[in-house]
Image (tube, rainbow, N blue to C red; front, side):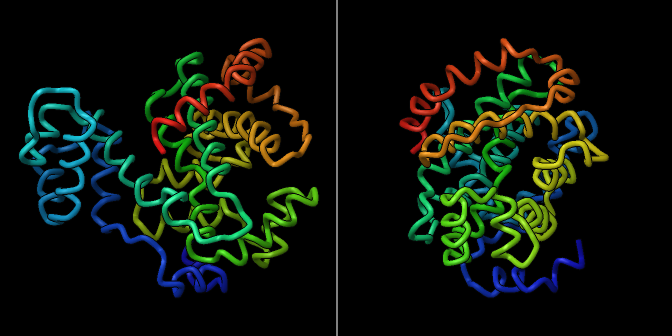
Length: 286
């Protein structure tokens, strides 16, 4: 990943002045929470305390989203009460909040509201696939669905002109990946998202999913999670293309469906219900 540091597009992103900042320790915290049987509670809390702003945001988020008649006064209080698993979900959500495209996007032609619906669609489909297959944590997959395209969001935030050029090519029928390689001198949003995970010191699991969600069979680690996000992304992309007025027909990988124990009837069920579920969730989160 070091070679990406000198890439011209990556340099432009870093020099744009719009790239959100995340403390390096945040990745270490996520690593601990992703493996709740191994992490040391005191060590995890000590890392939070070193970054008062991050601790404050986490506690505020927990208070806001909790249905309990109580307030979390400290990060120890919150993590001890909720447990590592639920604290992990809120921690990953923090990344999503930093990258909500509707609030921070700067592109003029690219419609980030429609694209955000695609991200929601990926989350919903990933949740359903994980639940059906019982091969991965469904809540984790929902969150990863939201952040799987952070490379697109970063382009919208940091390089809006390039994002608009890519979108214009897509509207003419050029595949997204091909359009990105044309405009971005050979790299794609998956590579940008993977670099961002490296830059922010985020867990290997998240970086692998983001880097390989378009090329799942090339993944050498976290293969099941990558396949779930890939299949969910494909389903939601069909929905997104319809929002753009395109009539693209995607061929879903039978090999991946078989690996996950997903049949065509279940796929059709997700595809049929997805638009309504996206609209319902969109009204809640936006």
